[in-house]
Image (cartoon, rainbow, N blue to C red):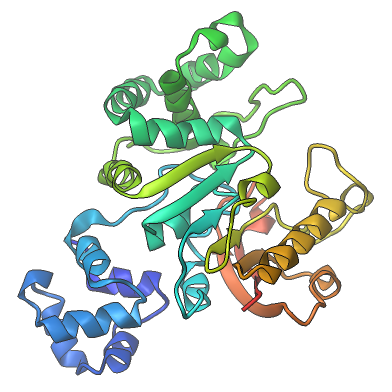
Length: 341
């Protein structure tokens, strides 16, 4: 059974704050938390769900162990920023949810929208999402095999598959299992490739892997229960059919805190200043046709210039960052959440 205090914390509340906002005595809430959610009064469940911006069904699913979390680690993942993102969702709700830079999909899995379009430019990542949705049994068997054989030597052998002809012979599910295993076993959860498209992340220090979790099963069930379309390509193309009343969340590669000449110039394969400007312009275009847009980025001086248009509202927040190749890049960092509504 999921602990209520954990759900509250994930959404930015202490138990006392949750009790106050839900209009429930703290002692009563603390007593309720020791029992199964099925024994709670309906009005109490409704009040708590409303405070947490959840439907009653989703809240009960979370409390009974159906909580979903990303099945991969992803640099810049949004688990730590979720409470701030939740606070700034469109108050009127939305029709279809779009996440063009999905990564681990923390916000998607927290909201569990009934209609969604997710996209990423990384084909190995989107292939993994497809496998979780369409071939969970075979994927799980392969993941168990990887975790049982996990060692530095084994990891380097699996990593080296993209350097030999065997890689093209892998099925899509085998590629997905390789991707998830390497993401969890590699250094700091990085996924990095060289100019030849070959992964070059070293083996990471970790305890015994647990690649097949209840959350992985829950994510697969959600992807099949809801209308979730998985796309792979340019983020701009992925939102071409977004329409009035839809919601788009952009989580692009962040502007570096220390900007260099390579960032301010046009980068063909990266995400430099030109691409940041294109993203801003796309956000304005979407807003002009009635789409609600939210963006996240680093809290750097350039943001003020990029998002100076009055249609943007810039919210300054902080988040913990644990996945970074440099220790100095971990800890509390300044971020911005930008909305067009």
